[in-house]
Structure formats: structure tokens, C-alpha cells
Image (spheres, rainbow, N blue to C red):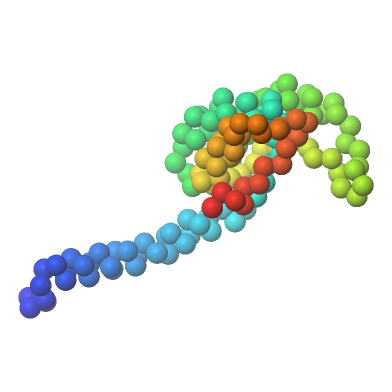
Length: 131
């Protein structure tokens, strides 16, 4: 090793360190295999989510369980609405609890803050486009 220049040894060490991180990076992407791919919300739930965002985002777990069941006004409205069928598909019901990755969490916030987003009666927010 003494005949190998110092910059080559440092480069080798960096490559080895990076190689050891690769499985962790792949696992971080796969960590949310059970995460929701879409969230159904309305304006009340979206406002509640945005109000509680800092608290929801404060942890450092790679997966976040979002619980908006404390948003009682929206829950009461959703439970009071009938759920008729539209053709063969049921009417969308809002998601009060869902599991998403940190990347999806930030993406959902960004999507809910988009100007002109129509949330009522309900909107399905696609999280697959969140990268």
C-alpha cells in the first residue's frame, strides 16, 4: 500500500464507502412498499393536513403514518354523506389515515398547495408521481 499514491487510496476508500451505502439506498426506496400510492382528500382535510404538517413531518422515520382523524368536522361530513355507486365504481371516500414516505409527504404538501386545485367534494391525489 505504500507504493500507491495517497489520492488513489482516498479514492478507493470513497468508492468502498459508496458501495457499502448502495444497499441502504435501495432499501430506502423500497422501504415504503406498503405506502399508499394515492390519497383521497377534501378541502377541510387538506387544510387540516397543512396545518398539522410541521408536527407530522417532525419525526425522522423514513415512513410517516398520517392520522387526520382529529379533523372531526370533515369526519362528520364524510360519515353523513351517502355512498352511492357511480356506475360500477363507488364514490370516493376521504382518507383520514394513510402511510407515506417522507418524499411522498413533502410531495403531498406541495400538491395541496398548488393554486387552483379543486378538492371538493373530494380529490384523489396521485403520489406515484412524487419520484
